[in-house]
Image 1 (cartoon, rainbow, N blue to C red):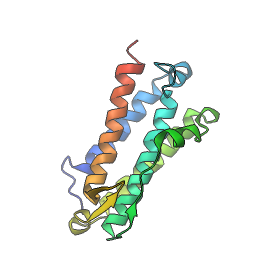
Image 2: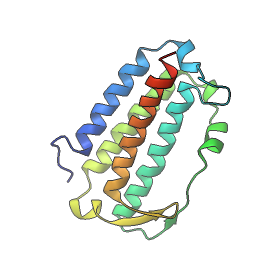
Image 3: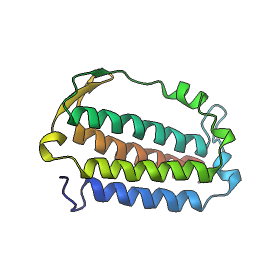
Image 4: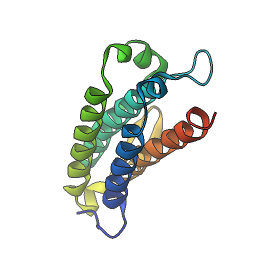
Length: 154
């Protein structure tokens, strides 16, 4: 099992709370704000984070189970275009975000050291199941930093 000493599991939990606190502090106007014409709204960024976490969580599970499938990439702009995010409430988005994050934590908490080291291929790149967990974490942190720097400091 994954060690709980500030490792991936603890960082995923911390990131979950940080993101919830930030998003819950924002107004509807802020959540729909785009810092440039053709850029995503904060709500769309959140749905993008969810999409990426769901896809990479599945890839991590597959790699951990020694699935030799070469997984394709995904086109984030097409996913965003077809997400219908503007029709969703922030409550619905955050409910999905939290449920998915708790599922991701449970997934990685249940993987052995041996399975975390297994390698697979996604989008033409080799990665371990563990590396995908850290990608999920880093991707979330990257986008939250963008929200803080480009959306909220205007």
